[in-house]
Length: 318
Image (cartoon, rainbow, N blue to C red):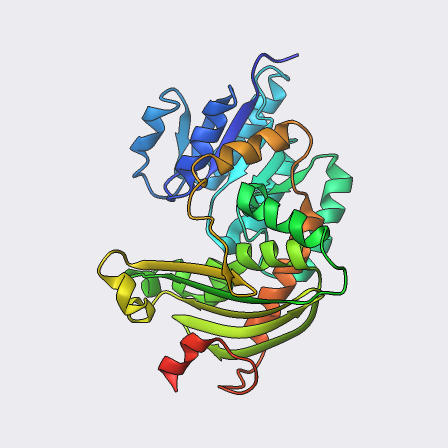
């Protein structure tokens, strides 16, 4: 048996890739090869200075195949995928085609039907696909879920979610600003919140969109045990005035008027995710289905405007 597990990494220049490098190192394993079409990846030296680096997918693919043919000691066992959202599906397939498991950032895919084909591919290849859903490992989120599970089964909670993470004009010129590549704002910055909420409060019964623009979106979700008013934005002007003097971001989740405090404890969640995966407890393809369906529906629904049970932050946009 190997002393350490070999990893590949796709999307090494992205900001989230560093968390994956740290997780690979913290779990005592080794990054063999990394891929990105951008070459600003000097951070690799802080973790795995001997890792091979490729600018072209075809050469990375060939390298994986060569290592696989050299035997189990050399082959890449897992491929961590931090590439743009629209490439996740093809990069997962690349991993499984080379006899490696895939660990993919959220969103796993952009469309719910892509999940069906990936599940079939898992069965054909005998390899697993794991989704990073790190909020499910946050102690405060786990405590809330336990509280709801142990509470009255027929109780429906009132939840308000607001997440504002200011972005400059670069955002709209990058792949993140292209709905065909990112899935739009609800997918790009909100998918992990929808996963968290359905994990805690149950399946979706109604999905209403009040506003949907390139820089902000808002709506209402009726879950089995929650009425959720949500607001997402990358517009600095949406940050509450009392917060602007201190920071450019704002995050708030209230449950029946009580603030859920989970601003701390994020540092090691990717490492915890890797520990779960390597221990056989990672979140598999089917776990992503609810949130992928939600964001797919959000971007294809017609916004109804300020009617019904909308988030109070929308009052700024009458």
